[in-house]
Image (tube, rainbow, N blue to C red):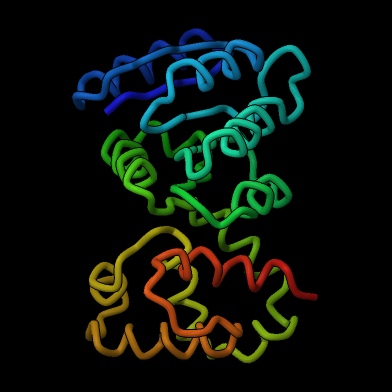
Length: 215
């Protein structure tokens, strides 16, 4: 699996390269700035991009914007964004097109190798990997807004785990319920958020988007 990595701090960048290579990822490029990232994504077309939100020269949201531009050029390009703090606007921008694998992790998660590598693989496979703190803040921010206000406490637990990229089986195990119960909660969530029946797995992402785009 080919990875383009963008991180301006040398020690962290080098550590991530070594970690990913230890788990049999191929590092197609490891860059430190926005312009380098844009060139690498355009020329190398990796299986997944792991990108720090803030990169030189602006040190604002240059990494994220480069990744979003690359996704416009290559629809569905899997992108896992790393950030020092929860930035709700960044998470919303990343999710906005609803296509391809996306992830948003706080950098603290990087130090858990298994968790980080699982997130990279999940995003590369077209899934989602949203940091629990990101999802918690996004959900609590508009907990009383419609239609989120119609979700039961259990449904809110389920959508929070869905947004992290968990499967129904994983949700069932964490909540100590059956997969059938999770499927029922998921169906109720989709109905309350106005998402019609579909075979598209991205409904799990769209469930979060439906919440974000209201109120």
